[in-house]
Length: 487
Image (cartoon, rainbow, N blue to C red; front, side, top):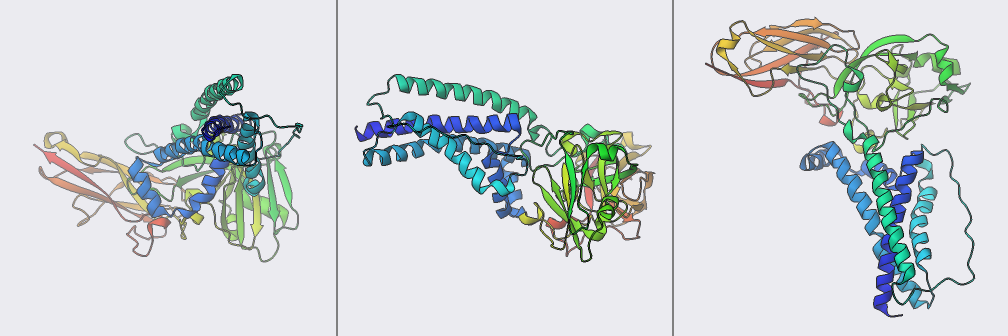
């Protein structure tokens, strides 16, 4: 068989195999919610991208959601195309050894091999896998040879390739509809901000392309590690115990001064301390590691986990947790950034080791305590206001958040912080939630103004820019808005 025909046959079979492999992975992801090797590898490789280059790349492609979609699309395309050179190499090796290699063996190898290798080497991180099954392959007496021309078998494999493409595209469309692209990065800010954020408007950040959809009947929560009595709870067990309601605000560590990755809700759940005490922690316990169904992990100090305000939450604003917010259970750790509030919680592990969490391995932290923050929601930056419309004043409104310290005072400035006036706190919230504030501002004349806000937390500490706090531990400083008044 000529070299050119070997190359052509290998190229053709490799492409079909790449398409088939992608089809199988998409089918597994859709049917069984099994993370594909590319998604798992993405989680593992992401730790090598520190926050600064990550934000640079994100800015170039138009945001985190676009970056995620670009990564998924290019990975799928690359996965398909990589089959082509693989098929050529496989064909050439077989030709040199004077072996007759069939299309179906080429396809089988390049479809099955990545899945088998992934199952072996990525098994420790396949958090959503319950089991893997394999079936033996029958051996043939003599492998079929490459046909000297693209005949009936080539037509058959071409047809199969088209079917895989069509089926894969259909599954991909379904996966896209349930993927996180539609809500990942949801922000809550602006004129319509209310004291309690509606569930469908609550800010959302996720590392996943497709978030878990947990079967409540199969879900369980383990309390393990440095405890005398490891325990496993089912959802029905929690329905029988008395739960507490707690209003708590969550904020993402990457939330900008003017951004809306912050929301407030009333959570109903069980104090984590109750579950830990029931298992009798051993002396020397220093950390509690929280595990999610999606293989996400993070740790909190043992004393923080034992705080009466740290919850295993089952409900959000009076209803079961929505899927995107961690159904059936998530951690609520007041005063810490959102990454510590692990969703789809399935394991609470008491340990002595301070194991880094998912985002911490990427360079976030090391300080995860929420600093005091405030924001102006209206008027918007670069607004133009006619002086005739401001005779009775301009309504300035926003939010302030002090972590688990509450908000005692909010101040407003219209001269870039040269002077301050006390704002009105319309909604004080709780010690664990944000406060909503307002100020009736009357501009003196037509001019450009720099509006600024600052808050004082419940411990008396005034919001400020912290020079020794890296942006990877949460941005600090004042939110400023430029407003132009004209006649």
